[in-house]
Image (cartoon, each protein chain N blue to C red):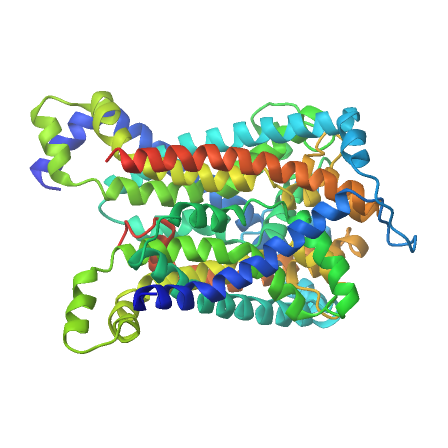
Length: 283
Length: 289
């Protein structure tokens, strides 16, 4: 601790202490429900539903709940659907979002803001306003209960966010470098592909990770347009509650199975994710 | 036709087409549905004009749902912004463990909502829930969390704040670390301290970030569904039926497609108006720089 930071701490005294107390408290309360879920998933159902609650602290774990969920519930098949839907959504959102965001930043037009607001307004639609018409249309064209149908709906929810995040990313890429590349004989498309894209990579990864998470976690739209073959993880878990409401430890295990991939993705890509979510402010 | 305009059309084309297909089509079709009495069972669907909207506006359940939606959004977003700001500013002052803490704080945001809401549902259970147990240790009588209209709404607020505060925190954290050190130092030389520093330096510089956080959170909070589906299903009674849940019940549970579409359209209008106002003020803040 340097004398300067000691001096600052003394000056900020009360506020700094209050902030740290809040942060510590928030950390406990943030993680507690996730801890509780993990603990229940490793208990027998008798312990998981005991009153008063049993704190096992993972010391005496049992895998019976996981075995039941993985072998009997069909949740694994649902997770494969979730994975396909998420990868498809990411691919689609990036394929249309990257060039569009670049064009909006580099070649602004008079009607720019109307277009930007239109893109954002696609986020405002209540899920049912999107899901109900598609549900009826899908029934006519045979897309109900297919992963492709889920991807179409998920892209409606993800594309706007990806585009907004990528616009912030391209704003941080200096246009001068591309202009220099063009003077050296690059076409505008070449400057975009060879100069802007590599420089924007962290932002693109952040947008991709966020799009993946949004799709992986999405519940409502998938609930409406799937019923059995294309059911995603969250919907499978929700249905599971319908017929196994008393198997609390199995519910917890199923929940953990859904959480793990999301947490791994966040852990691996937290830097890009924070860069993206903070609109490029945190490098 | 300059070469640039040609490029622009090519670059923007795919997204414009995709968004038109996945948002404009359902919107127009939903608008049409809302003017009919379509049900999946009856082979016909008749044009009924504004009848669905008239029925909604005359239905006390609609006004209750609207009121709950607006109040829920207001309280959830307000708490999330205040707490998120305090957390972001504290996090930005830490030297060590910043990354670890950030990752831990992001867990509620990253966790699959349906999964983490089950945890809450179990923790709030009246017979074996750990929340009442811990309150009991502190000498507080058990609370019927999800079993009483008022406490059910409070529970949903608490869970929403738990889930979404990290999102607000990350956006604002970006704003806090983007404030140049020189600006702070100059303000310190001028005698800004604690609250006055916050009021005259930090807050004005954070406005664009606050605007973004408010915009995204408000639009999403208006559409809250997952937590309500898992924790209360709209109950007890219909104490936690928001507009979104109302339209879901009408269209999916009762198969009144026209009526459900009409409620969804009204929720969309509400979100558009709120979004427009927030985007307008966001641009104003940006232009003022």
